[in-house]
Length: 112
Image (cartoon, rainbow, N blue to C red; front, side, top):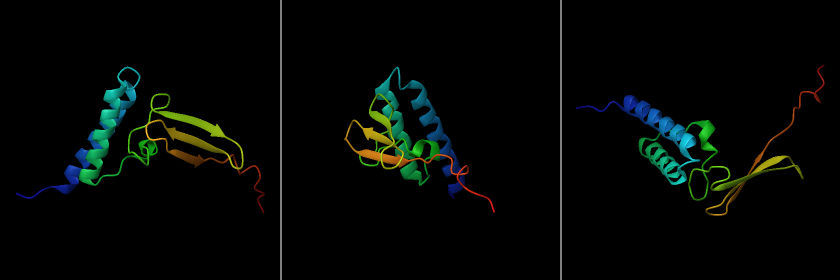
């Protein structure tokens, strides 16, 4: 019997999205279960070679791989010095990640 890879990947993508949505909805009441859902979603994505959707990709710690929840296992701050950026600190492994953000440049840009 032949395997249908496209169908398998589509099913894996649906399961990843469902697990991450469930983790988002449950993390305030049961944080351990929410972290477990994040681990399962990551394992499914690695095994089936499916990318995690963009809106959740930045919520994983690059060092230890856990799903980050603000206030539970991550600290999020905004900084303006040098360049404006968001600082995300994982409270499990202590890694720090900086994500730059820019203000509207269109007001400074002059059209010719």
